[in-house]
Image 1 (cartoon, rainbow, N blue to C red):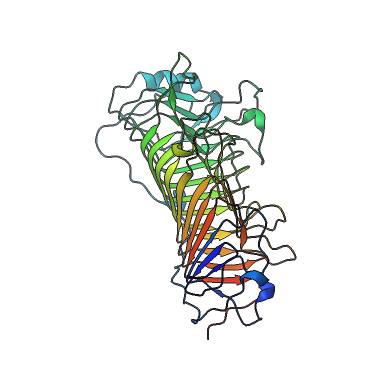
Image 2 (cartoon, rainbow, N blue to C red):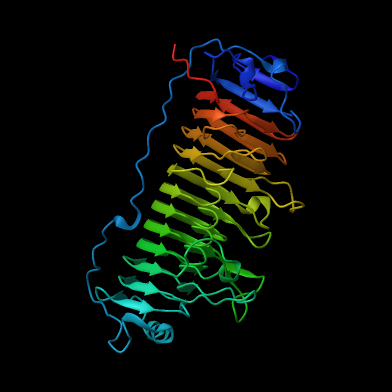
Length: 443
């Protein structure tokens, strides 16, 4: 197996860090198996790594992904016995009924189904806090907040906060706030739905719009009288989120702070103030594991997929994002994995697996489309596109011992393939890599 200046090349393919200038106009990158390791932080020169492909371009087997329909799905009214909020609770959004609804929900027995009357709208500026709900189903209704007050210490309240509990279902409802756009730090926690250590929860056919905080937050149940200590009692577990639309929220579309198992499907997220999906943690032993996002559409926002925060490397792993489409570039990077400097141990965050996705990268001189520090990311059967223009950013930038794998992807319009630190590696198999200014050669 030949080796050129620290780069091991199998099957005599063109290495992925090859500069476009080293190729003739008719030649593009057909990548069979390429491993890049120990290249240093700067991109190696093109001249030292040129190697012509010995086989014709491999046809792409990536498939198109239908846009997510989100909350457009119809969910039938639950069968069986049910109750509705009492008529004494104002249902035209003219008076704040947060306290009245909290008291009424607290009075319900385990296993209760609540069917909200058609057209009912509840103003809940103080939010609805459900403590330890057991097999509670809430179907229908509009729940609205008009509150624009917050401080540096009290950054607003979610419309629904669920503290512990098991078997909760929220479905066929609309949640809305007064945010006219952008991120507002003093109202960062005024989100749509926050689950705190809840088990087996289902959020289905729900629209969340214009809240100041996250659309949905999956957070831990913490100890202490106020559930705000540094001791984690339980993560959110076995959550199901499907047919959900999140539009115009001020922070993240969905935050995965403390999760042990979650399945998301048919999710449409538009115009978030920050990131579409954010895997963040507040402390070293907190993170997300066994999460699958299958089918999503993302429009606007800062980053499509971000993993930062204070969690240790091993606290976040086994994350799969598949059949998702970015409809427009967000920030410079589509994927950011940033292990905390000085984090305990040297475990990588991940693996993160992106399968049959469409990633639209930005135009930046400073970051790459996949920006990884201490991360393990695999991209398979996906499309990675860069915008036309004068700035063509790199596909990847790897540091902190990161590992990146690309398999059978179509990558078009990039400036250079990327930068790899000494302890990081890139592995590329199959697919088509077409730099900016060149066309595919199907001969």
